[in-house]
Length: 136
Image (tube, rainbow, N blue to C red; front, side, top):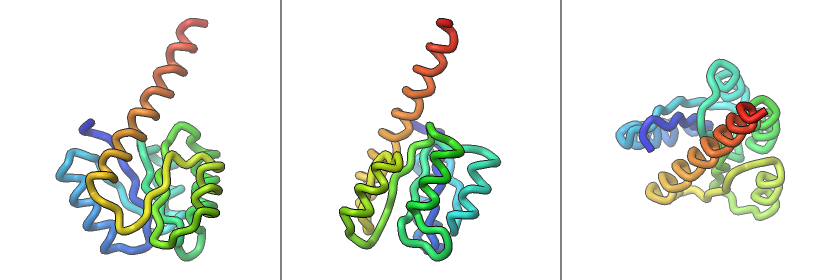
């Protein structure tokens, strides 16, 4: 699924840059944000298909950002990323509408699969809404 827009939200710049380059080579359109606040600004300007969101960040943490993202753009799929295993955070993220939850370091092929799966889900939801709109 080339052309999927992904917003990488992580306070570790080297992680964002490296992952961004690898995704770009695979045909993804990549934006980056170093904070939850910066992510919200980018989403307000142009909503991506999928957001890869770090849980632990200074300032606004990932769960707070997730809550605000879903309020702004309910159809955007969010994959939570963390280096700190916590079932409580994973469950809370899923309750708030996260698509999935991955542990760092993440296997690149697994991440590609999750991003494509999340983008397909968003596309499916948009198609269902469009179909309902046209049938009324």
